[in-house]
Amino acid sequence: MREIKGNLEGSSKEYLIDIYNDISELANVVERAERKSSRDNSSEDTSSSDTNSLEEAFHFLKYGSDKFYKNIIKEQKKLNVDNLLGNVMNKQKYEKRVYGFVPDIPNYLIGNPLNMINIEKTELSHKVVNIFLNTCYPWHIKSEDVNQCGTVYLTVLDLLEKAGYRVNLYVGVATDLDDNFYYMLMKAKTDKEPMNMKKMCFPIASSSMLRRIYFKWAESCNSKKDATRHGYGQYDRKTHIKNFLEEHLKTDFIVWEFVNADGKVKVEDVLEQLKKQGIKLDI
Image (tube, rainbow, N blue to C red; front, side, top):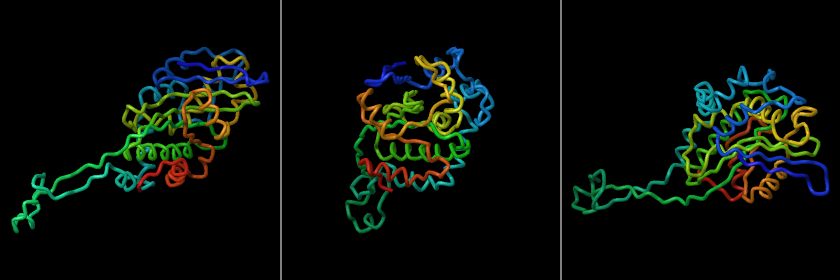
């Protein structure tokens, strides 16, 4: 775990960025962390989460959940995801050659030596992209809206990888509390790992990632001030998140968010945003 903290220039306002290397590290550290006495305990008491307890949320984070996985598959069917994914598979070009895996009967009958069909794979460039998914959103967003929005992001991640991109994915929360900034980032997958849908379902598409896991972090994090005073803060602005992360982590980031989750985020909308950032998928 890496911690970056300090004060904003010329101000007493603080910032704190905790970066966890993987799911296991976040779960092990935050689950065991002691809640600071002056802080809230909404991670235990919240009634707007899709898990029954903080303990259950940590269990699903560490080991995955068949329930969340089945919900994602159900939501993906509504997105016509099979059609989208099929069009972004590694491009395969069929060519007629003297060797191959299946005969071309017409050419064989006329004696053409190019009487076998083979596949020539088109090599895809493996560009690495860094994505931070801010799972912070307003109080009125429902768990089912988080599930739907998370499904869209999971689908686009799958599309990116099938199109040849390699993704470093950070999932977490970026909040602004009275102009103090509290960020929790977990590296959910590296560019060396293939997309694991079942593993990613809970951190990306469950309201408990914010309302239990992040809340517990805020209740126990190493901030100078109370990180839960007046509530748990508001979601930080996307442009500020990008600039702030790039300044402190020295890495380019694409920032996704759940702010408009109740507006039914669409795959096409996310792809259009990526296109504006120079990432175009052929679908």
